[in-house]
Amino acid sequence: MTTAIYPGSFDPLTFGHLDVLERCVRLFDHVVIAILTNSQKSPLFSIEERLAMVRDVVLPKFPSVEIEMDRFHGLLVDYAQSKNAQVIVRGIRAVTDYEYELQMALMNRRLAPGIETVFMMPAENYSYLSSHLVKEIAGHGGSITGLVPELVENRLKEKFKKQA
Ligand code: PNS
Figure 1 (tube, rainbow, N blue to C red):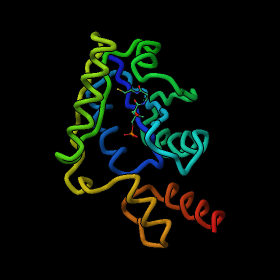
Figure 2 (figure 1 turned 90 degrees about the vertical axis):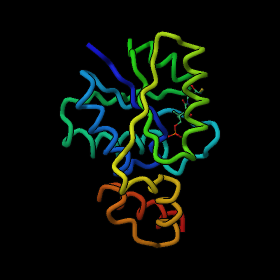
Figure 3 (figure 1 turned 180 degrees about the vertical axis):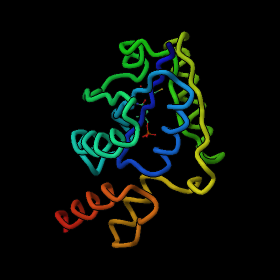
């Protein structure tokens, strides 16, 4: 049985993440979405809000996926080992993602040689999609329809309305 961890900030979940998740579910027996802290980013949504969004969108769509509900602030490889995972999945969109992803994959391999990182390409119509751009567009009142699930779109609107 192969367990794959799909880690990320998911701030917020986009259709690009869901596309990669769909591919993971087809390949691996057990997929764990892990919402982790990226020390380089300050999140818009709290970890609880992100978990709630992932749970509400993903559970009805993929009933077989285990959603990790833990708050995890440590190293990804420690988390992966605690779940007995053999694989870390990362979505890669364009060449610009590659350098950062390669560095992380090689560093994670150094820390935990038994865990393999697998890169997956989302559908090309999501190759320009990022949580960062979604937040920027939503923050300025632009349309994000078709980029994120409706539930996420509504939570983004609520969040920016509260902040205004
Ligand atoms: O969605 P993101 O922000 O690109 O995800 C990056 C994430 C959260 C997977 C990465 O920052 C991470 O693994 N954080 C946990 C801490 C860690 O293990 N850092 C060392 C990576 S070599």
